[in-house]
Image (tube, rainbow, N blue to C red; front, side, top):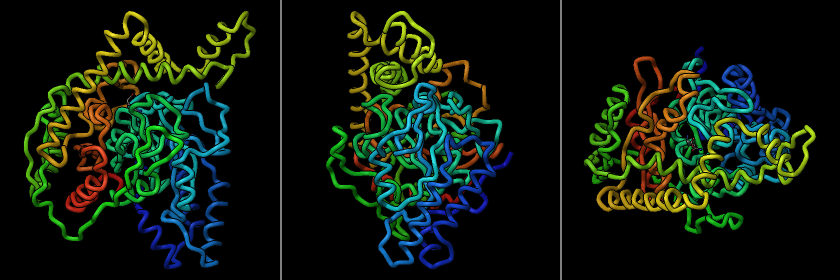
Length: 486
Ligand code: GLN
């Protein structure tokens, strides 16, 4: 199965083609809808809102014809991960417990997309409650990788990455708690940005682990991702952790070199078990950075080893608390069986509504927070999180950005790891530390392995370093040329 988009259209291209009259928002929307249908076997979409998308497009075309000013994403077809609330459009987080939830409001990121005149094509498949690295655990069934239909697209934002790679939307929104934008972007050969914690509003994004969750864009180029980021980033009074700093735009100096740039290469990220093709491709990308004038220097992030364990204590603790609201009374699926008391109603509703991985995490998180274990696990993990953040602070005292593989492997086969949670958790070994530190990082496609599967380079910048990060990535992207489905 080869589903990769053959005629990639970028945001810039879409805007220019509409401005010149070569195409219309409606035509772009029809093309995305047709592509979604032609690639339906990828199962990237949880819901395609064909009528809604057409109506939005017609309204934009009419406003253009009337000479009205249009927003920066006018007529650009965009998909939204099902973790993010969309007014009037079913939003399930790929869980049976939210199977019938139709939000009465848009998440802030979605209202900002609408204000920018983007076309919301529909909702994208994902792992249930964003827990997973393969998009195999979903109310909608697994999503598949456009580069090889027997393989996973990565997760949890698997649909967001697969749809962009396959061309059924120009860009998408995902969420990233421990790697869920970057890892699927790597597996599908697209660009994906995890913004600094607090940079993009979480209001209306269904909570998994609130101290880690961030919404971010996926697209076929750095410029596309930057364009969507520019629309969704910025202060939101509805999110108490939202940052108030101004959002800076990247600077794409036409023939800019990267002279003077210091790139740190963390030694702890080049471990045994990393696939040789991944290492070779990342090394080659580092070589290209040097050719552009950058200096690559080895750095150490000594607490990297503890990151996965720390993450699975903190993320599960937060998840167990966040997911307690789905009890069949306040929110979510309610059992139709007759029960003797309220406790049984909660238990039965939750047993029916949550999948196995979500249950595993609720149990683990409840244990981590339970009296007598709190200090030993939760508090200790918070302290280790601080050490991990300090590792990054120390590294950034000497270098501008860090460069690592995004994932130790390329896309694996559907079913390969689904019964082994530990193997699955290790998929995020290179993305989790940056999430714990709260800084910003992105995936940039940097090559393919011998089977043609995409390989991704992760670039990490200090908190609020998005503009710099995107500028550097864009420069490197031009040097590397196009890869994967782009
Ligand atoms: N794969 C990781 C997990 O399962 C990260 C998920 C995410 O970033 N949402 O928790």
